Length: 179
Image 1: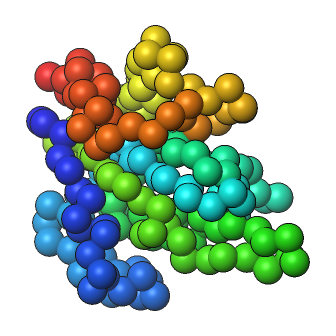
Image 2: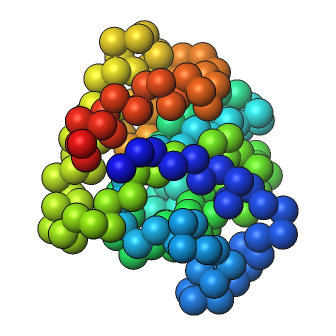
């Protein structure tokens, strides 16, 4: 199956990010509500403050004033996975307060490989190959930021890339994973 550009679904200004569970998912058609697959999205941080994840003490997802590519799997529906990003992405101000709910404003583009036709147990190994393939291609192109540390599923980029360049990077990987 080809990659689908799901950006418009999650950048829609009418989308109510305050809803939870089925109420949030009901805002999407079948295409936007894909049940399982892998995703890749670009996030642009125009602030000098880094964007953190709320897991534990919080890992830096996007360095200040940079772009990052985040990739991974979703097995409980794409809306639920993106809602998790909405809940987790935040900036910490020097005064101790946080900017919450920033995900829609930093999301640049979102591509999905719908794997609903595959068995649930096949998704994790595909995700591993997806993340490794993306990271290898980013490295080959010299796109990994010199200050990037760790996380295979979130890679800070050395420069801003366009959505069409991201698609050029990940289309061949998707074709190998799900011919």
